[in-house]
Every structure is written in C-alpha cells, then in structure tokens.
Image (cartoon, rainbow, N blue to C red; front, side, top):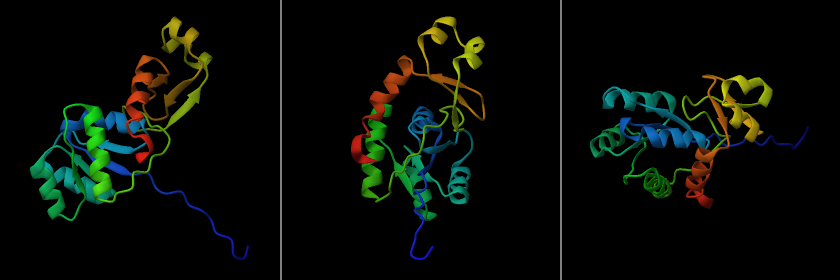
Length: 168
C-alpha cells in the first residue's frame, strides 16, 4: 500500500530497582512498567543488568547513581521514605532527565509476568469462598500463577497510581 505507515506503539519504560526499592518495584509492575528488582549483588551487577537490558536504574544510593552515570547509564536518585514520595521523586527525576515514562498493561507485581483474565469457576478452589462470591474479575499471572482481584489492596494501589496523574 503506497504511502501507508504502520504506527508502532512506544516501548514501555524499563527499570531496574536496587535492593532498597523492592516495594516500589512491585508497585511499578502493577502500574504497567517493566521493572526488575535487583535484590542481591554489588553495584557492578545492577550496572551490568541495566546495560544489557537497556534499563533505567532506580536507586536511593548516591554512590550507585554516580557509578552508573560514569558508565553512561541513566540512574535516577529517588528520595523519600514512602512509595508515594518515591513515585513523586521518580516523576520529577524522569521529567528533569527527559525520560518518557511509557506504561503498558499491568504486570504481576511478584514476578513481572503478564496477567490474563480467568473465570471465577477456574479459580474457585484457590481463593476463599467469600472472595469468589464477592468478585467477578480475576487475573492470573501467566508465569507464576499468582491470582489477583479488585479487593482492598487494589483500591490502595489505584489511589497511589493517581499520584502519577497525567504526568505519564
């Protein structure tokens, strides 16, 4: 077809969070960001992972940020003692560094796998009876099989996600 173009959606932003930011990493996955959580190992390991996989490093460690930047990587120094404050810091840092924050569909907060809708009947034996009766929508991670539904925790996550507002 002459003159036609195919629109390719932008790739979702890829992060790697250091060992101090595990809770934030889980929330970023739930918000649709491809986020690795680097729990164990030294600075060289997280720097290597960021290089190989093209990830932005999220850290609250100034020395790690400096080492990453000296290795020509993007490393955002997040401040704040709560995930809400860290998200605000992430938004500010990304804007200052002109890093677009592109989200995709929510991912498993545990492992980062894709989520698929499952029927109530398929999971009834895996959740408490009152949960199966009360909820209609269930999601299951295609990788680790963790189940999700829109309970109290979901509502708290959505409130925190609104902190992103229109900034992403």
